Length: 248
Image (cartoon, rainbow, N blue to C red; front, side):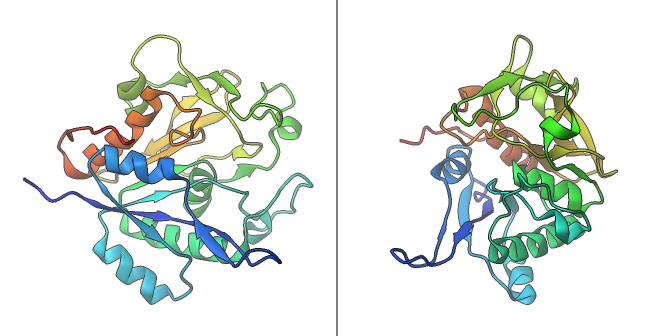
């Protein structure tokens, strides 16, 4: 039996506070999705040494980029919107180095939420900084009073998203105010919300396994179908359909 692939997962970071020491953390849904799909998760702390990041990637078979707070638009030459809540600089420094090397290697990557946004920016794309202002006719993509807010999803034929969801009505969770504007040439859009907002992307580069979702298949509000995205990611790496196991 082939060895299970090692999948790196970047971690969120919170600096020290009066009542808490500094800590790194990862929502369990990310590593549970990898475990259930036949991979071995490896949690990555926010490293600062680029050589250390390179060595880590040499040992991994793929990377999951987690969601979280916003990436700082000032780092890409844009003025921030008042609604932007940047992630901690220590995490963003690491994430940007990590994604740059992932892209240079065309390493298998599953990017979720702000992880997908950073993947697109790294490859030359741009972002809407606040959907209600940039796209005033858009549907709601975030409800502060409902963490399980959902909307419909329209998938493209011949995509991973079509294999995951098939036919029928699809609804996914939605908890973001930023979104992809110009898509990097390395990707193609494979799912949109009914208002046209990009909800999923996949690699347009031959032999590069790269999947991005704006929605969160790891969240408690995800459906059983959403979790199959992790399975498709592992299949893309191994070429084999894994024996899926339920995680308690």
